[in-house]
Length: 258
Image 1 (tube, rainbow, N blue to C red):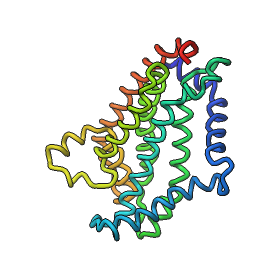
Image 2 (cartoon, one colour):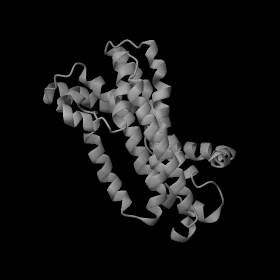
Image 3 (cartoon, rainbow, N blue to C red):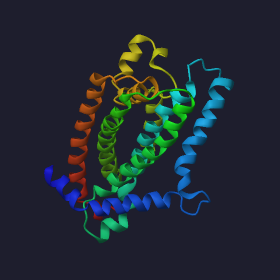
Protein backbone atom coordinates (compact mmCIF):
# COMPACT_ATOMS: atom_id res chain seq x y z
CA UNK A 1 0.00 0.00 0.00
CA UNK A 2 2.91 2.35 0.70
CA UNK A 3 4.05 1.75 -2.89
CA UNK A 4 0.66 2.99 -4.14
CA UNK A 5 0.79 6.14 -2.02
CA UNK A 6 4.40 6.72 -3.11
CA UNK A 7 3.47 6.39 -6.78
CA UNK A 8 0.56 8.81 -6.42
CA UNK A 9 2.89 11.25 -4.64
CA UNK A 10 5.31 11.04 -7.58
CA UNK A 11 2.44 12.01 -9.89
CA UNK A 12 1.14 14.76 -7.59
CA UNK A 13 1.72 17.42 -10.26
CA UNK A 14 -0.60 15.53 -12.59
CA UNK A 15 -3.20 15.29 -9.83
CA UNK A 16 -2.98 19.04 -9.22
CA UNK A 17 -3.25 19.76 -12.95
CA UNK A 18 -6.34 17.55 -13.35
CA UNK A 19 -8.04 19.20 -10.35
CA UNK A 20 -7.25 22.70 -11.68
CA UNK A 21 -8.51 21.75 -15.13
CA UNK A 22 -11.75 20.36 -13.67
CA UNK A 23 -12.31 23.45 -11.53
CA UNK A 24 -11.75 25.74 -14.53
CA UNK A 25 -13.84 23.70 -16.97
CA UNK A 26 -16.78 23.25 -14.58
CA UNK A 27 -18.05 26.77 -15.23
CA UNK A 28 -16.26 27.44 -18.52
CA UNK A 29 -18.35 29.57 -20.88
CA UNK A 30 -20.77 30.72 -18.19
CA UNK A 31 -21.16 34.44 -17.50
CA UNK A 32 -20.23 34.26 -13.80
CA UNK A 33 -17.58 31.58 -14.31
CA UNK A 34 -15.78 30.57 -11.10
CA UNK A 35 -18.12 32.81 -9.06
CA UNK A 36 -20.74 30.04 -9.41
CA UNK A 37 -18.75 28.19 -6.75
CA UNK A 38 -20.00 30.84 -4.29
CA UNK A 39 -23.31 31.70 -5.96
CA UNK A 40 -24.64 28.14 -5.94
CA UNK A 41 -24.52 27.62 -2.14
CA UNK A 42 -25.74 31.21 -1.62
CA UNK A 43 -28.82 30.60 -3.80
CA UNK A 44 -29.52 27.33 -1.98
CA UNK A 45 -29.35 29.12 1.35
CA UNK A 46 -31.82 31.77 0.15
CA UNK A 47 -34.25 29.16 -1.19
CA UNK A 48 -34.18 27.08 2.01
CA UNK A 49 -34.59 30.21 4.09
CA UNK A 50 -37.87 30.93 2.28
CA UNK A 51 -39.27 27.46 1.62
CA UNK A 52 -38.95 25.69 4.94
CA UNK A 53 -39.80 28.29 7.62
CA UNK A 54 -42.60 30.06 5.71
CA UNK A 55 -44.04 27.53 3.26
CA UNK A 56 -43.49 24.17 4.96
CA UNK A 57 -43.84 25.62 8.49
CA UNK A 58 -40.81 23.84 9.86
CA UNK A 59 -40.36 24.57 13.59
CA UNK A 60 -36.66 23.72 13.84
CA UNK A 61 -34.79 26.68 15.30
CA UNK A 62 -32.69 28.48 12.68
CA UNK A 63 -33.66 25.82 10.17
CA UNK A 64 -31.90 27.34 7.11
CA UNK A 65 -28.51 27.05 8.86
CA UNK A 66 -29.46 23.68 10.39
CA UNK A 67 -29.94 22.44 6.83
CA UNK A 68 -27.16 24.40 5.14
CA UNK A 69 -24.24 23.21 7.30
CA UNK A 70 -25.31 19.60 6.62
CA UNK A 71 -26.24 19.99 2.97
CA UNK A 72 -22.81 21.12 1.73
CA UNK A 73 -20.89 18.08 3.06
CA UNK A 74 -23.68 15.91 1.66
CA UNK A 75 -23.25 17.52 -1.77
CA UNK A 76 -19.49 16.89 -1.42
CA UNK A 77 -20.32 13.22 -0.79
CA UNK A 78 -22.82 12.65 -3.62
CA UNK A 79 -21.06 14.65 -6.35
CA UNK A 80 -17.79 12.87 -5.53
CA UNK A 81 -19.34 9.39 -5.64
CA UNK A 82 -21.31 10.03 -8.83
CA UNK A 83 -18.40 11.77 -10.58
CA UNK A 84 -15.77 9.25 -9.53
CA UNK A 85 -17.89 6.28 -10.66
CA UNK A 86 -17.57 7.49 -14.25
CA UNK A 87 -13.99 8.77 -13.94
CA UNK A 88 -12.13 5.79 -15.47
CA UNK A 89 -14.61 5.34 -18.34
CA UNK A 90 -14.67 9.11 -18.91
CA UNK A 91 -10.85 9.17 -18.98
CA UNK A 92 -10.60 6.22 -21.40
CA UNK A 93 -8.41 8.15 -23.86
CA UNK A 94 -5.82 8.86 -21.18
CA UNK A 95 -5.95 5.32 -19.80
CA UNK A 96 -5.31 3.80 -23.25
CA UNK A 97 -2.53 6.16 -24.32
CA UNK A 98 -0.21 6.93 -21.40
CA UNK A 99 0.94 5.38 -18.17
CA UNK A 100 0.03 6.98 -14.87
CA UNK A 101 -1.48 5.67 -11.62
CA UNK A 102 -5.11 5.10 -12.64
CA UNK A 103 -6.23 6.00 -9.12
CA UNK A 104 -5.40 9.61 -10.01
CA UNK A 105 -8.71 9.84 -11.92
CA UNK A 106 -11.20 9.03 -9.10
CA UNK A 107 -8.90 10.77 -6.61
CA UNK A 108 -8.96 13.97 -8.70
CA UNK A 109 -12.79 13.95 -8.70
CA UNK A 110 -12.89 13.70 -4.90
CA UNK A 111 -10.22 16.42 -4.54
CA UNK A 112 -12.10 18.73 -6.94
CA UNK A 113 -15.31 18.42 -4.93
CA UNK A 114 -13.35 18.87 -1.72
CA UNK A 115 -12.06 22.19 -3.09
CA UNK A 116 -15.61 23.20 -3.99
CA UNK A 117 -16.73 22.45 -0.43
CA UNK A 118 -13.86 24.51 0.99
CA UNK A 119 -14.75 27.45 -1.28
CA UNK A 120 -18.38 27.10 -0.16
CA UNK A 121 -17.28 27.56 3.44
CA UNK A 122 -16.89 31.28 2.68
CA UNK A 123 -20.69 31.44 2.33
CA UNK A 124 -21.24 29.16 5.35
CA UNK A 125 -19.14 31.27 7.72
CA UNK A 126 -20.66 34.53 6.47
CA UNK A 127 -24.21 33.11 6.85
CA UNK A 128 -23.45 31.81 10.36
CA UNK A 129 -22.23 35.24 11.48
CA UNK A 130 -25.13 37.09 9.81
CA UNK A 131 -27.70 34.80 11.47
CA UNK A 132 -26.15 35.45 14.90
CA UNK A 133 -24.32 32.16 15.40
CA UNK A 134 -20.97 32.69 17.10
CA UNK A 135 -18.13 30.44 16.07
CA UNK A 136 -16.18 28.80 18.90
CA UNK A 137 -12.71 27.27 19.07
CA UNK A 138 -14.34 23.94 18.20
CA UNK A 139 -14.47 25.13 14.60
CA UNK A 140 -10.80 24.09 14.41
CA UNK A 141 -12.01 20.46 14.42
CA UNK A 142 -13.42 21.08 10.93
CA UNK A 143 -10.34 19.73 9.05
CA UNK A 144 -10.46 16.53 11.14
CA UNK A 145 -14.12 15.83 10.32
CA UNK A 146 -13.47 16.74 6.70
CA UNK A 147 -10.54 14.30 6.58
CA UNK A 148 -12.75 11.51 7.95
CA UNK A 149 -15.36 12.22 5.29
CA UNK A 150 -12.65 12.38 2.61
CA UNK A 151 -11.33 8.91 3.55
CA UNK A 152 -14.84 7.48 3.58
CA UNK A 153 -15.67 8.98 0.17
CA UNK A 154 -12.35 7.94 -1.40
CA UNK A 155 -12.86 4.31 -0.41
CA UNK A 156 -16.27 4.21 -2.13
CA UNK A 157 -14.97 6.23 -5.11
CA UNK A 158 -12.13 3.77 -5.81
CA UNK A 159 -14.46 0.79 -5.48
CA UNK A 160 -17.22 2.14 -7.74
CA UNK A 161 -14.88 3.63 -10.38
CA UNK A 162 -13.15 0.26 -10.84
CA UNK A 163 -16.36 -1.80 -10.89
CA UNK A 164 -18.11 0.57 -13.32
CA UNK A 165 -15.62 -0.26 -16.08
CA UNK A 166 -17.03 -3.81 -16.10
CA UNK A 167 -20.57 -3.26 -14.77
CA UNK A 168 -22.12 -0.28 -16.56
CA UNK A 169 -25.44 -0.68 -14.72
CA UNK A 170 -23.62 0.57 -11.64
CA UNK A 171 -24.12 4.21 -12.67
CA UNK A 172 -27.90 3.86 -12.32
CA UNK A 173 -27.58 1.87 -9.10
CA UNK A 174 -25.39 4.63 -7.62
CA UNK A 175 -28.11 7.19 -8.42
CA UNK A 176 -30.72 5.15 -6.55
CA UNK A 177 -28.31 4.35 -3.72
CA UNK A 178 -27.49 8.02 -3.05
CA UNK A 179 -31.19 8.92 -3.15
CA UNK A 180 -32.05 6.29 -0.51
CA UNK A 181 -28.93 7.23 1.47
CA UNK A 182 -30.14 10.84 1.59
CA UNK A 183 -33.31 9.83 3.45
CA UNK A 184 -31.43 7.76 6.05
CA UNK A 185 -29.05 10.63 6.79
CA UNK A 186 -30.21 13.57 8.96
CA UNK A 187 -29.85 16.30 6.31
CA UNK A 188 -33.34 17.86 6.26
CA UNK A 189 -34.47 16.60 9.66
CA UNK A 190 -33.12 15.75 13.08
CA UNK A 191 -32.67 12.16 14.25
CA UNK A 192 -35.27 12.86 16.95
CA UNK A 193 -38.14 12.39 14.47
CA UNK A 194 -37.45 8.65 14.24
CA UNK A 195 -38.68 6.06 16.75
CA UNK A 196 -35.80 4.93 18.99
CA UNK A 197 -35.30 1.52 17.35
CA UNK A 198 -35.20 2.96 13.83
CA UNK A 199 -32.86 5.75 14.99
CA UNK A 200 -30.52 3.09 16.42
CA UNK A 201 -30.45 1.31 13.05
CA UNK A 202 -29.89 4.54 11.12
CA UNK A 203 -27.05 5.32 13.53
CA UNK A 204 -25.01 2.60 11.78
CA UNK A 205 -24.96 4.82 8.69
CA UNK A 206 -21.37 6.22 8.72
CA UNK A 207 -22.58 9.54 7.29
CA UNK A 208 -24.72 10.21 10.39
CA UNK A 209 -21.77 10.96 12.74
CA UNK A 210 -20.10 13.01 10.00
CA UNK A 211 -23.15 15.21 9.39
CA UNK A 212 -23.79 15.53 13.13
CA UNK A 213 -20.12 16.45 13.58
CA UNK A 214 -20.39 19.34 11.12
CA UNK A 215 -23.51 20.56 12.93
CA UNK A 216 -21.84 20.30 16.34
CA UNK A 217 -18.83 22.45 15.53
CA UNK A 218 -20.46 24.95 13.14
CA UNK A 219 -24.02 25.33 14.42
CA UNK A 220 -23.86 24.47 18.13
CA UNK A 221 -20.23 25.39 18.86
CA UNK A 222 -19.64 22.12 20.69
CA UNK A 223 -17.17 19.29 20.29
CA UNK A 224 -18.25 16.51 17.94
CA UNK A 225 -19.07 13.05 19.27
CA UNK A 226 -15.64 11.49 18.84
CA UNK A 227 -16.87 8.00 19.65
CA UNK A 228 -19.26 7.88 16.72
CA UNK A 229 -16.79 9.68 14.46
CA UNK A 230 -14.21 6.98 15.20
CA UNK A 231 -16.79 4.49 13.96
CA UNK A 232 -17.10 6.46 10.68
CA UNK A 233 -13.32 6.62 10.41
CA UNK A 234 -13.05 2.85 10.97
CA UNK A 235 -15.64 2.13 8.27
CA UNK A 236 -13.89 4.60 5.96
CA UNK A 237 -10.49 2.94 6.43
CA UNK A 238 -11.96 -0.52 5.80
CA UNK A 239 -13.65 0.77 2.64
CA UNK A 240 -10.40 2.44 1.54
CA UNK A 241 -8.47 -0.84 1.87
CA UNK A 242 -11.21 -2.73 0.01
CA UNK A 243 -11.38 0.01 -2.64
CA UNK A 244 -7.61 -0.09 -3.24
CA UNK A 245 -7.61 -3.90 -3.38
CA UNK A 246 -10.50 -4.09 -5.88
CA UNK A 247 -9.09 -1.22 -7.95
CA UNK A 248 -5.71 -2.95 -8.25
CA UNK A 249 -7.38 -6.19 -9.33
CA UNK A 250 -9.54 -4.47 -11.96
CA UNK A 251 -7.07 -1.96 -13.38
CA UNK A 252 -5.07 -4.70 -15.14
CA UNK A 253 -7.89 -5.08 -17.67
CA UNK A 254 -9.02 -1.43 -17.91
CA UNK A 255 -7.45 -0.89 -21.36
CA UNK A 256 -9.14 -4.00 -22.83
CA UNK A 257 -12.56 -3.26 -21.39
CA UNK A 258 -12.76 0.45 -22.20
